[in-house]
Amino acid sequence: MGILDRLSPTSQFIEVIEWLDDSPNTLLYRFPVKDQEIKNGAQLIVRESQAAVFVHEGQIADQFPPGRYTIDGGNTPILSKLGAWKYGFNSPFKAEVYFVNTRQFTDLKWGTPNPIMMRDADFGMVRLRAFGIYSMRVADPQAFIKEIAGTSGRFVTEDVEGQLKRTLVSGFSDALGESKIAALDLASNYDELGKFIRVKLNEEFKTFGLELTKFVIENISLPQEVEAAMDKRTSMGVIGDVGRYAQFQAADAMRDAAQNPSGGAGTGVGLGAGFALGNAMAGAMSDAMKQSKEGGGGGATAPAGVACPQCGHQNAPGVKFCTECGAKQGTATKCANCQAELSPGAKFCNECGQKV
Image 1: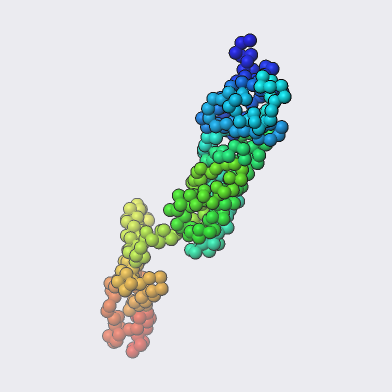
Image 2 (image 1 turned 180 degrees about the horizontal axis):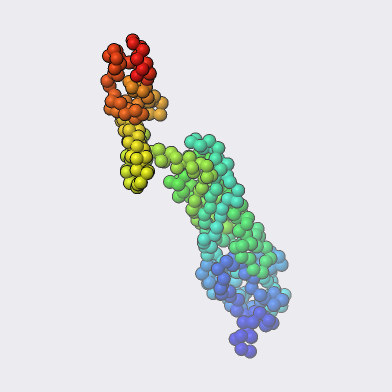
């Protein structure tokens, strides 16, 4: 009989029991034993990151760590647990052999399918979403078979991921509420929060015979309206002095007006608009500088304008010529007939009645 016949599961008795794992996600594999009959003296080979579990008549009989074993009556504890063999040690015995993969399974995904409600000191009630990765391994092969795998011939990570993800999200939500970390400080506490959650959830994983070896938070996101409020707050922090910011904007507006080309009939209009814009910008800069010197903020009142003595138009303080009629400011207008001082905007002299 050739070696392939001896290794084939269709042979009468199994002489070599081993498992070469060629998949990245298999947690448990049941060795295909024909009629569950194993020959006395068969070789059991358990590789690193594996554990072999023998099940006899529905009960776990023994577990083997990595190594090479000869299944016989002299040095195998399983024989004592299976009881004395009626026909001696040369007869085969019936048992199921499960290989459990005990290595770490990494880069498993988790995430919150629905937003998590949280009370925040800065924004009040907010809704958070989070996602990340985790790693786990089988820590107790016997408990894993009893609680999760059962009699499955092959058990992969996808078969238990749904349960584990819901457990992780529930634990994350509870831990996030207990931590009371402000939303603005969450990004600086990802590592600490992840370690806290891993320790907290390990007790739950132990009930499945598993161990949560890593729990990584990649991102915790806020609602769009909260992010917009944070952007505005950041912008105000960058602007700093509002008065100086107004000066900067006025200077930019003047530069853009100077660079705007115009010609032909629009030249006079462009020049007039330029002078008016220059005066307006000068007034705005003067107001901003005054507010900055006085410590003015959002509640400061802008100074009142100065009336033109010729036409009564309200001009910005410090303007030397009226932006409406061009009259020189700071000098009173006199009647051409009687030389009496005229009131701002008067059309007739108050003394002699002469039309202005």
